[in-house]
Length: 181
Image (cartoon, rainbow, N blue to C red; front, side, top):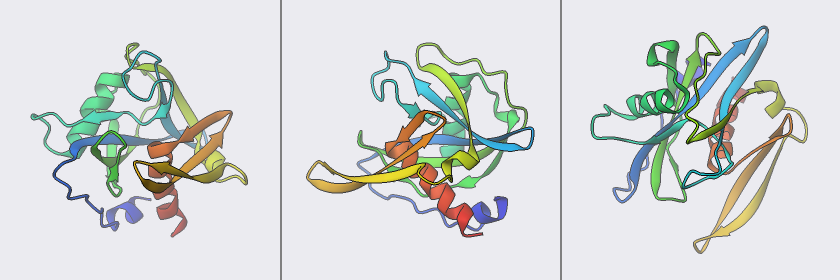
């Protein structure tokens, strides 16, 4: 995976009207099983109430690029220090429906657990098995109309959890890269 990500030429969105943001796509291992760390947002946050998301958020002026943004936001949301991660690379930027250019940063979590979720943002921390995303029937997509454009929206169903929208699109990028090897 490290090789695929290192050789991946991350496509950047150059639209200067978009605000910058980053998310951390966290991979980990429990026993012999590889997992993805995702969060369920609270019902009190401004956007994406109750949705399954990757930790992340808006770039602040003191952030030195998307990796710094993703790590800072992950510390704020989950209480995980940056030194617990090994950064593997990035994926192509994704445009959010709220006017952000989001850079997905892929990281390996060395010691899973010890999560301290911010109760104002995070309702639940999930570790979903990577294999679950590849099983037959786990993925489907629909075409939606949004702001006058037709867009493909991806959905994954893993262990009773539905992941969709931008988070699913980011995961789809990672899975496509993994399947190329």
